[in-house]
Amino acid sequence: MAFAALLRIALLPTILWDFLIGARLAGMWRFENDVLALAALLCFYHGGMVLNDWRDLRQDRAHGRKRPLADGRIPPLVGLVLGLGLIATGYYCSTLVSPELAAAAPWLAGIILLYDFSSGVVRQMAGPWLLAIARALSLAWPMIAVFGLNATFTPSSFTPFACYGIFFLSISRIAQKEEEGILGMRALAFLSAAALSPLVLAYGSGVQWWFLLPWVLFAAWLIPPGWRIRHEVWEPHQVQAIVRHSLSSAPLILAVCLVAAMQRPQDMILALAAPLIMMLVRQLARAFPPE
Image 1 (tube, rainbow, N blue to C red):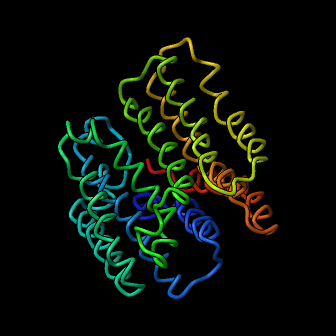
Image 2: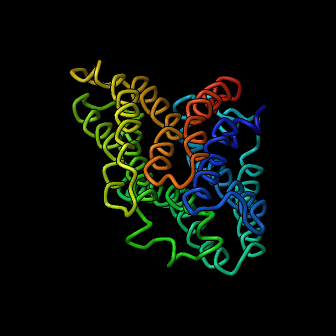
């Protein structure tokens, strides 16, 4: 149980969903060495989660958080070795997939390590951007594995990754205030930016314009919890609740991206599964809470 919480197992379905939707955005269901590519991505993601807790150990103890490293269920040294070992394993698996993924893996590893080990000032300024880039790369991971970085991030194909990155950038700006709280209207501006992130999908070629319908539904789901308390100063527990609500909703925004770029009818069926992924994440979060 302690290791499951440390690894953020509750968020595992979101990475699996990133990978599956990323493959469909690239026009694939399967590709050579896809299992290894997925294993590399999971190692990077969960390794980053472990190192983040290790880095925040002193702060977590000061605030009395019941996280596995902070409360002593797992020794800090074990957490550090586990996190670094997962990052190294992710890089090794990437080298076995393709030269293209091997070239991209150091970038993702570097972003994760910079986020987890940078100073407080650097993290405050650049942390949301690093997280946004990392999640955009996780969505692009299957396409990078097959076609490489240069072919993945082109003017005609970058819009879903930009959409996903903007979503996480906006939510991360709210998450930075989990300790001190934030003015409701200021937080609502970031939440609205997250809801508007699919706007960049209109720039892509071959856009299916009826993606506007799931976009409106997504916004109608994301905004109300923040809208109801917009005139209040959000207390830390309210900020945390909104952040959890938003992050667990990430599968929905990928459904919007998939509909916008829909290539086959099966993609619509896959997009309709997004609420199930979201509910699974929420159930796992109850079973394996991080604290």
